[in-house]
Image 1: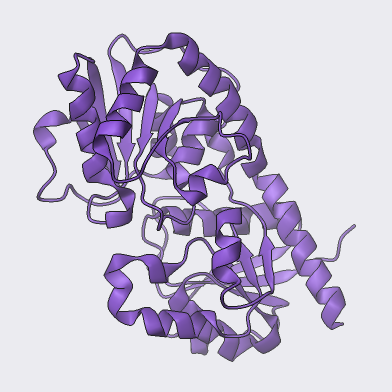
Image 2: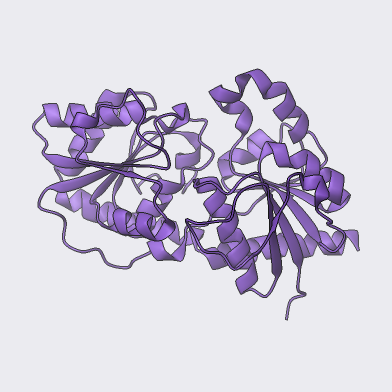
Length: 338
């Protein structure tokens, strides 16, 4: 039996977001393997997902007593300094994407870089982040991303008579590429493709979204609701820009057996060495994305092949596999410092 670990994750908030969902998945996967996990947060009590972790609510992370923890995991650039302050050599950085690439943070990139230079070993969810993090430290370990078990299904039901095309993400975040997603849908419709465009976002629609082109718009779904929505759709568009650290909805679609059109950005190309699990288009190119959408909507055999291949690739994101990699990292690190 492996030694029981005591781990704390510092969560800046608990708002509905893919990055937060993954931190919760980490906690539950480690707990399932017999470890104790605390989620220390400045956010409100969780309402959109359940978790088996112990929650500790603080106004400042420095209030938390980490003396009993084997490791403290910083999860967002603002949590890295506090993790280092309260845990020292026991602090770890979970990187799901480099915040310094985000246009909204351009003015504070020096502060982000300073946080990344703190002497914290880094865990990355995508191989595309290894080179990015090695700009700051050589101590980088790939652990992969978790897709919740609810999304996985071995078989898919018959397609909808009017195909349902899912476009996920907040339009207010530039890296999600939502305008190009709308453009791709408009391009496909111009060439006589008939389908229902389904939008989902953690936030209300942006003021510039062409809502007259949308048949459904879902806001702030729980994990269970998101799973049901994903399973009701036939195709997913993932128009993300290269700043995207992973792109969780695309991975969830693949696990669900939903064929996907995605941009050829590093994080998506890192899903597997053989790029046959989706159709790819250049980023920030609505026309090319639309052409790939037309190709996918027009070819039932292609959709079936991508369903099968996507599920195969998605197996790497099973919670137990990522938890085993996490566990190995923590135990190896414990042995090194013992």
